[in-house]
Amino acid sequence: MEQKNCEMINKLDGTNTKWWKKSVIYQIYPRSFADSNSDGIGDLQGIISKLDYLENLGIDAIWLSPVCKSPQDDNGYDISDYQDIDPMFGSLEDMEQLIQEAAKHHIRIIMDLVLNHSSDEHRWFQEAKKSRENPYHDYYVWRDGEEGILPNDMKAAFGGSAWEWVPEVGQYYFHQFSVKQPDLNWENPKLRQEIYDMINWWTEKGVGGFRLDVIDQIAKEPDKHITANGPRLHEFLRELSRETFQKADLVTVGEAWGATTELAKLYSNPDNSELSMVFQFEHICLDQIAGKEKWDLAPLPFLKLKEVFARWQTELYGKGWNSLFWNNHDLPRIVSRWGNDGRYRVESAKMLAILLHGMQGTPYIYQGEELGMTNVQYEIEQYRDIETLNLYKERLEKGYTQDEIMRSIHAKSRDNARTPMQWNDRENAGFTDGTPWLEVNPNYKEIHAQSQINDTDSVFHCYKKLIQLRKEYPVFTDGRFQLLLENDENIFAYTRTNEDSQLLVVCNFYDKTLAYPFQKPDESMNLLISNYKDVSETMLRPYEARMYYNNQIKSK
Ligand code: TEU
Ligand code: CA
Image (cartoon, rainbow, N blue to C red; front, side, top):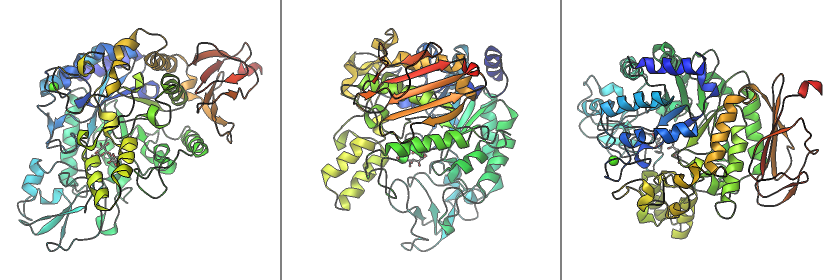
């Protein structure tokens, strides 16, 4: 019955295929979005209460970070029951209600599937660790050994060894993330079948698609130190797709830190054999010391940023599909990171939006990005994220100074993105009537949704307009990308061109005033959107961004 919801939206769109190529997806981190029952944690009813806001913004789908049952060691990325909702967020009925209510607002729900690992509190793992003969034992990745002598030196992403000893079975299990996130063994066909059944069960409930957490790491081979891009990865993905996604008109997006453009063409092959699109991070990893960790800060190499975007735009054209994003729940706020969260907060937030949304791919907006929300600079006691807290301990032990560590945390902690959504200027930014699980950014009196919704100069309106433009002009979807001024140290400029029209995007990435680098725009150039009230023919002001549209290119 619920599947009708998606069919209904398809009809409204006037298309039955590849709806996601014209869509904009909004990511919700449920625990930080809206709290309906004053326990300080966002929940499903909270999201339902904000659907009008999201429809007003104009987004097509919500990527919902995990809401399944979980002990919350990694905020829900450690699932203990894939077919139930965590009571913290509500019930299965609330989830069904969300799917239905969202459809009435022309919004689909994309669930976050964490298939690389489960929680150690999942029934499968509870059984698996009982004995080597248990039927669930092989659902996980085990290696023989002796207590204290590790199978090898592999490290977990959240610190420490990737191996954990279980005395009952006299073996180590493998975990790429926290010790409470044992890796699933995709080599086991029975496990794969359980996963497919679970996905099909959600599809029947009417979800619009799935985001696949660290999907490039499912085909691990720890004996060879292989985590990402294991030999059987694309074989597994094709089977997964055939057994589940291809049976419905879903969007699927694979998180892949290790993707290259070549691999991305496999993941997102237009023949639909694997996924709809890839979510890769090459641009996001540029401001760190090469070969080191994200905490080892380096200035953004701007020319490299342009090169990376241009390469992905060009190489995937017609052969794959990319996600366009600056933010998610693991990344710092972009306006603080590569914009300016002081004097030019509004201008730079809009510039970054215009720059990204003119490209080919499916844009993602992470909650609060549409308001220009910023990073926080908390004391260590105020942080909640397992990665941040482990890093702090680990680096103190390694002899880093407190100041060095806090500088890294302020720049890169995942909690920068996880502070509660700023709805209004009331206490706790209108997020909760209780005590928020993570403190609200102290700038909420100045930056909040209520003041922006009806202000046509707001960051919110810039995003709203960009979403509308993507729907209105086909060139956003199909135009070929060309980078301009490749070696300019300040300006990011490009065109998108299809058979009968062209977009020109010109962005000043920095806080200085520059000469306008092109011929003065003529009457064939229609200014679609910009971030200053007027347009100078000779100058680009700090963080100025313009997007022109020209539909007379044939006559040229
Ligand atoms: O993230 C994948 C991942 O590799 C991150 O751990 C990343 O290295 C880190 O966040 C960068 O700081 C996904 C989820 O998005 C993340 O929230 C989860 O913690 C992780 O998987 C484990 O499920
Ligand atoms: Ca709540």
